Image 1 (cartoon, rainbow, N blue to C red):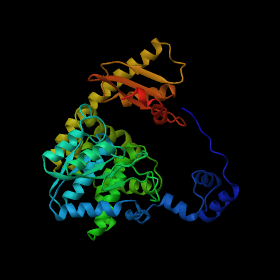
Image 2: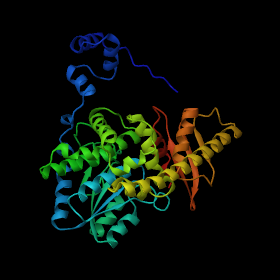
Image 3: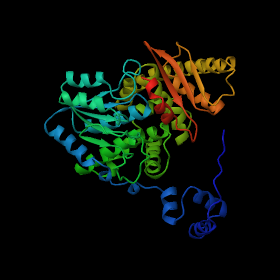
Length: 408
């Protein structure tokens, strides 16, 4: 573990908070170190409200996205909701699909196969849309760099709306709308939303056009809070609001799928940490061991009895995942020791039979052990596939970009 110490906070800012909040110096110091220096900022931190959420139409391309979805509904088009196979992606797909289906029937979902299709938008998914007469794809938690895929879909008469939170490249896909607060030309006030959070802003915009209020969207916040926790985004700003109210839904009246996951939990009230370590790994296990569709089926199922069966299957996948994680981590640590690589600045390990679905977890374990950038390889068909984890202040993505000519 590495400890990073904040510089001593501004004494006048500390004294100001002590006076206006009637708190002691220690708490005031901690608040100022977190960038909280006014009464209003402290109130938003301790007592976030749904009124603190920003207007969704402040996000670049939101008008175009809403217009295209309304057009699709007016024309009775088939809509495909597409998302990644991790927790952020599957909760985002479940969020969007369950909301749209509440008033529009022609909505299908698609999660790419981790092994056959890989991460992000796939040509197979676009072909699926074409084969089933779908003319609009809403992509969540992926797509910001899928320029070729969007062009491929466009040639088939299929439009894309992209809801992503990853850093864009130099060129954006030629989609009808690209919702991503990390776009350089997007002035949205908060850019730390997860993929499901961006999807929530889209349903918030849609709901306003339908005469609904934010209160009508509270039942969907259990999914958003789960994604925020699982994706380890900062719990500040809008994320703090969404996490707070989503956690209330999880504890008081969660959707059947989440309620089914919690049947074996002995705690009376869950914290956000419990969401990270209890709910998220089980949802993730579906995409790692079986298929992300299982997670979407669970999270969109409204019959509790059926949801309990889905949850039992996912619980078994999670047990299998834990066993694989433990075994491969031990093998990787042994490999580092046997090769006398404990003193290197990076960790790169490989074994052809390691399970592709858990090498990301193994990379995290190795990074925790040696605190250095880590890449774990396995064989995937006739290629090698890898998962990577980095450490603070080392941009592993940029390092890989610098040698991209060596990579597929």
